[in-house]
Length: 169
Image 1 (cartoon, one colour):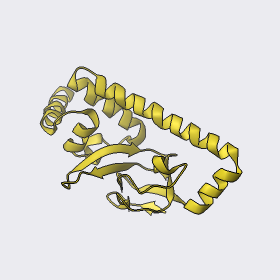
Image 2: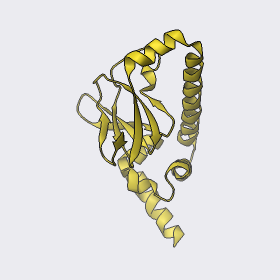
Image 3: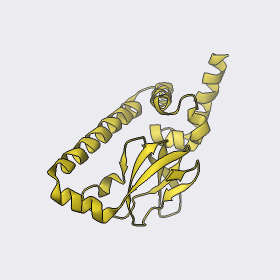
């Protein structure tokens, strides 16, 4: 299944199948009770989502939106859980998937714990480049979303991006 840039794969609170991202990138947005969106995760190729439903079903935690043209496999829920009961190796596969996601989140924590805001932004840009090159981070995420990922205000992200553009000249 192809999900084009800006299209929604699933919505927060709905229930449905699991998905394996074959190519592309997805963002997971969580809506607060007041309707304010917050970017909580980036999904990269080979991930199966939603992560919190790999062992048992649960409604979708957020809304998945394609950042670029993405190819997704649909994994039917009843078959997925039946296979888990029959095949212990499948549980190991899930553990390895979750381990990879934890390692990715550790990289994100590294980005957040940088002291200098410019270093936070540089680390995020470097991480994204491994998935989106030659595309740029600012073509895929708003300054608000970039700030949400690295714990900075939009205004700070704007100032840092302008400074980078000046130094690149």
